[in-house]
Length: 162
Ligand code: PNS
Image 1 (cartoon, rainbow, N blue to C red):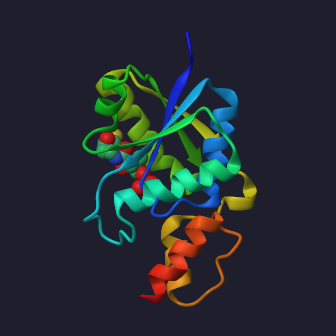
Image 2: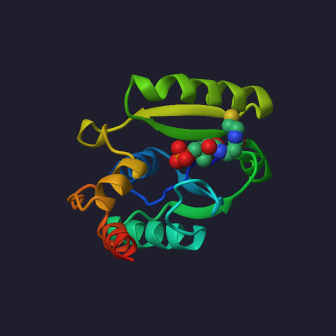
């Protein structure tokens, strides 16, 4: 039986923190499904679903993981899991501040569908990182190179220049 987990998120855009969690999950599991939330109208959303998926694809090709696939989803994450017989979610935890909401979602997902959540402590290198902060800093002209994969960095610079 192969062990499969979902790594869900908005990935708007993918950062080095996401890459850390996805690649470490992939190294421990048979397969990882990156589930990209389809929510183009989400406040603060910068990239379309197709753009976000394209950036994840380009990044994972560079990283060289071959047991990760990318899918889009909308609605409840547990429905996405149920439809694919997946019983595990992997989430990165950056800091204690993440924990309260993540715990609540994990318990809700367990209650709704018996889907378990495993938390991976984010590498300390990226524990301060979030897509929204990266977008904010880049929007004001700050240097965010080194915080996100090359493809995402280039796309972000292009988008803030528009
Ligand atoms: O990258 P994000 O925006 O922090 O990811 C949040 C995400 C997509 C994992 C979370 O919002 C989610 O699971 N949304 C799907 C809707 C859902 O299942 N809501 C109930 C959670 S208990």
